[in-house]
Length: 433
Image (cartoon, rainbow, N blue to C red; front, side, top):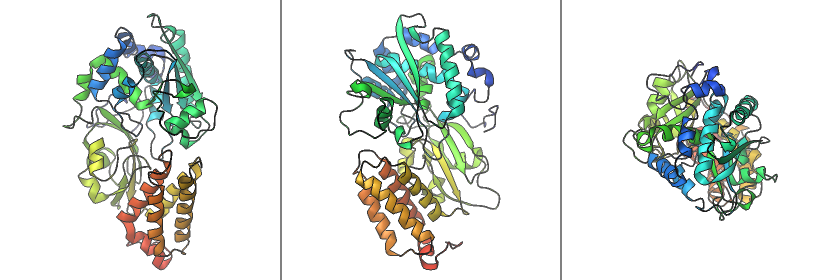
């Protein structure tokens, strides 16, 4: 996707409409494009009306879990007896995913507006936007936009002149992948080590500063103003026949592909059409081997499995994987699956917070076994060992980091076992594997 944004005719451009438009970054330019009309409308609604409108839209969390947004908001206590908080998860660290940073780079006021609406809906006077530590340009753009929003009275002690207090603060992370997990994010905001917490209690009951808290992703919140302006029913119609997965999705396409970039399509869009029509297909002379469609945490699928798959939550499960964050990592037939599996395992081993034994030891040993295999010292029994390790790492830890590592390894071995066996037999990659 080039800048200024020139959408493909088959894209459904809503969130990415102003990507590449420098004027849209500023308050005046955003207001000229209809910005903050949704916030003004939302502040004239009751909290319950607002939550019900988002429920009707079918909007689900775009960070990876896909939990219904309106339902999550409804978990917050109706009476505000303790401070309520909104935490915006802008710690986009999932390998293969780069859509949230583009929202912050080009349409920062869209995120501010969506966050302010969400804060009002859940009764929160304080919002923390937790931005990944390595995001330098998005951070600078967001800080400038937030200063503008305060100067114009859009947020603050009398938001939009409606007598509502909506304060937003930017909290910069320090470069830890684990802080994208919602409870680790809350610990980090509190100044603690970014370790995930045991649940229950869930954030809506006891979150940041032991108070009711909702955590939403950047893309999720950026969709909210459009829902408020156009209605939940309008958003729900964008489903390509599946009422459980509605709206549009930003998909980050990378890897061995002709036109990497962000693409916005309706939920239910065919994966094959995304790869070939929008992203241009594999590089010249190459064939598609496999796809990781939801960021590195989800299972890889083969080219054959990708052929009939559709890009929504249920469609990806039917294909044997998950939609996740929408980070589409493409492997062509030049890609060494064993090596790439090792790289991902090493990433998870490095990013583990180390508080759970299965994750701390499992990710490290998985990496070592794969490194040994790549060095020509692997054994056939290593494949069963890796599968056994993966089983011990799944569903046994506080968060799902070790599950993510296991998903990478199990799917790679099951789908591309001959490549692993070729390394073990010959001590090197065999091109025909």
